[in-house]
Image (cartoon, rainbow, N blue to C red):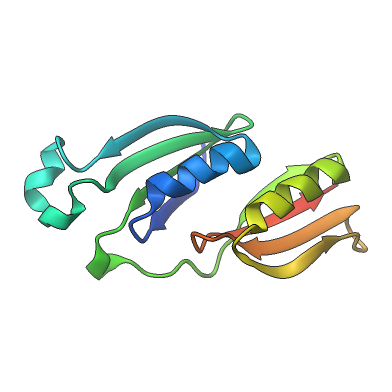
Length: 133
């Protein structure tokens, strides 16, 4: 079995994935839009250019996502996407990149369990935790 996060965005999934490519070195595997898909006839016209399904890989781990129809979007809460690092300098660099334009919930720094840990919500409202063993 494999467990993968599936993130829902408020119309900016493609921009978020492009941000993750630049910020943390993610690789976009696929972005499928509503337009041209069998789902198009079941979606409102304003969803045509939105993402029906996307998949990216972050250091070999798969994260999937889509744009939620406006009437179904709920701001993400109750979870975080957690990234684990061995090197605190690499963890801090990644944390700063994810936090740019977002909200820092806990600044990156040493804790009793970690050489480096921080929590943020990126500019696309996705919560992240960066931890260094």
